Image 1: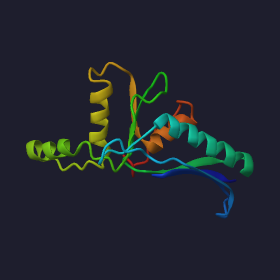
Image 2: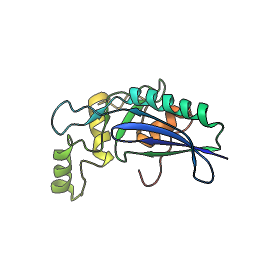
Image 3: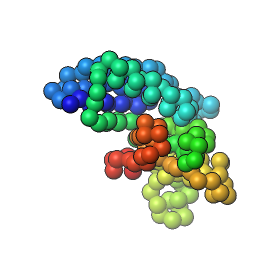
Image 4: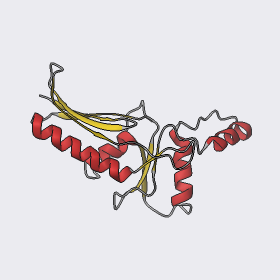
Length: 166
């Protein structure tokens, strides 16, 4: 049986229904460029991303028929934080190219010997939590884009990631 493949790229989203022999039955694409409110900052609208994922997935399934499963490929280290109860993002998604945490990375190295890079998700989630839930009072979920897409597709039933994204 076929699988639904979702590709969440840096500037667009694609969904394809792929048969067991590798042939593509249906393919749909929508542009989804990030925004850069300031040089070095790269953000995206996570709710808008969710809507676009659902749009291309529904279109591919309508043209390609039933599937056995879903595969997600994505921008590793792009980060989303969302409310577990409402399913709504609590701030912008931060792109893998975002540099706003570079000084946090330098501090971690000089004070603790940790080698972090701003393209990793750890400092991005710390920044988002500091901005949008500094008291750690909300029931929030964090994930890379694959986690966010799985959460959206499963209507909040699945919160997972692949080890290559973690």
